[in-house]
Amino acid sequence: MPLEEKLNLVYRMTFELAQQMEKSRIAQYTELLYSPWRLIWLNVLSGTSRGVGIAVGFTFFAATIIYVLQVLGALNLPIIGDYIADIVRIVQHQLELKTF
Image 1: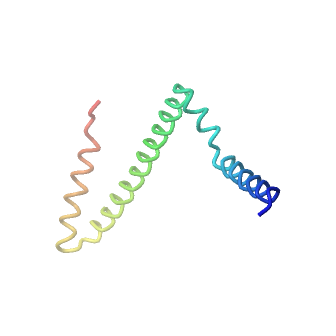
Image 2: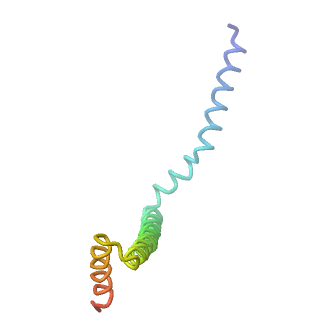
């Protein structure tokens, strides 16, 4: 293999590696590592947004479950109705308590 072909091959491989590194945004990641306060701020922000998202999602989920239990309790099913009514009563009692 002549020298010129080897150089072209090395150039192509280096160019592809540079493109892949640019796609992976490794330069921005290393800049982020050199500014710890920005890294901390981004982690706090992402953690807070995750926490708020979990809280909102759980609230909708719990409200849906309570609604379904109330509907099932209103059907007056023999065994399940009493059990569901007890659960709904307990939840409503907990919601009426003011803890603050």
